Amino acid sequence: MNLPSRIRPGSAVRGAGVALACLSPGLLGRGRAVLASYAAGWPLSRPGLQVFVVVPDEDAEPWRGAVVPLATSGASWALVMLAATSAVRRTALPAPIAALLLGGAVTVGDSMLADLGERLKAKSAAAAAARDAEAATS
Image (cartoon, rainbow, N blue to C red; front, side, top):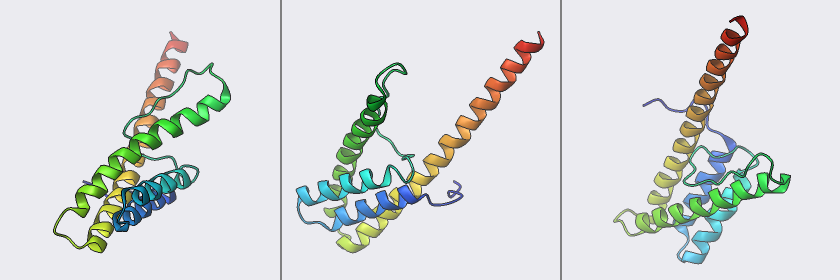
């Protein structure tokens, strides 16, 4: 498995939020940390690790194109990360070590998936361009 070519700023913010959530004793505090870090990391770089995303039609209002993906992916992200932080807090690992491990895993995993998404998008664009060029010559 290859490490990401670089750690993305949004991934680092999301990973830090998950690490902070691991250190928070209450579920409400963990939820706030996860949601705040997700919202803060979104404009820095879109997440590679998305659990569930709803993308509206292209002809929908412009605000829906911005709000709906953020809301749906943020809500699903929060649920999965709350479950992960709660599970990690129940392990025998001390909370600070568990926070560093889970936060680091989220940071690296999110960056790796974002890199993979970019590579797949580039391959898809190249294949579409090749098909268009072939159709134009036929």
